[in-house]
Length: 184
Image (cartoon, rainbow, N blue to C red; front, top):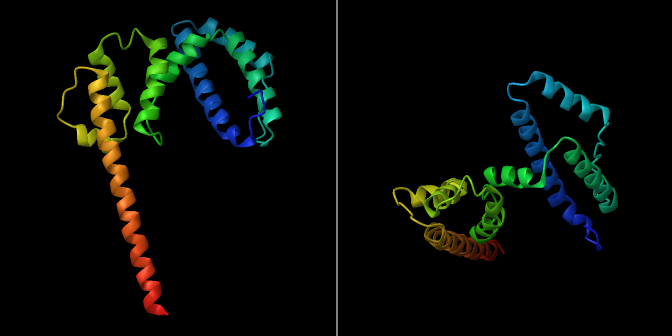
């Protein structure tokens, strides 16, 4: 954020903060399982800190200050950075990323969740489960031994999907131009 990011990155930062807040809530739930007093004390501490609220203003300085305060809160509630990254990894989904973007993020975050994906086969299964439903259906019935195998196949299928979308858009564009030409 520092160094002059434009306000257009504010949406991405906000999405990241929402994911981090979800991770904190889940961490709080895990920390308090079976210990009502600890949970009560933890929530009391958070409430007493009067956490700041983000008003949705597109000003990157306001967002940066809010993020800094929320990070302090994460520290206060005992949510270490590795726990937030591990939680982000467990919730990672491809959604609107390309397969390559998803793979890159998967690799980056998997370092923080080595216990849940300690073998190549576990990595392959986890990666596949985060792909879009459309890609999962196309991969259905195949068993992948490594992360790179499932990534390679998914990347190929994704590239074919993108090519098909482009071709359909070109056909649609030609048909619209024909319609416009016939109306004149």
